[in-house]
Image (cartoon, rainbow, N blue to C red; front, side, top):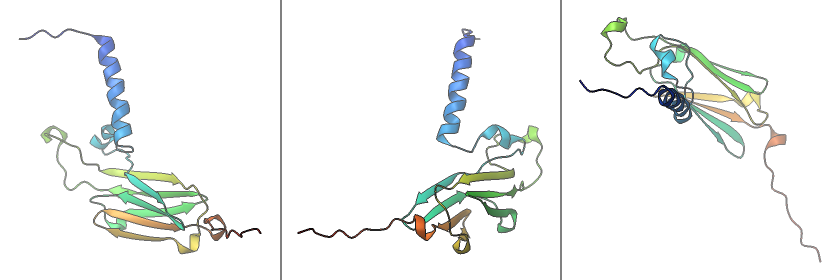
Length: 148
């Protein structure tokens, strides 16, 4: 049996460091809550195009019926529940990393959106939401006259 030197400060700092970078590398995917089927946040990409904001949300295993989108003021909310495939006892797991349970993610939008033209497509576990910007917030080119 090997002896391991006990260094309580180093262990505490290492734990805090690991927790911080686990969240930074994978925002919204804190694994501890997954194990018990707790609330989790899906990963998102937010792209600012000239005339619209595109939001892509990773939701592997989620069915369209278990997905709800809402737009309130300047916030887009994605929520629902991912049901577990089958009931397996916790002690039977060798590894448990897949998310299950209720999920929610609220994204503050950087500009005002034309609510009447919002659209969403769901394919292969990724939902893509197109949020057109209101006309007054879209960039507009200005013609430059040459002064003589």
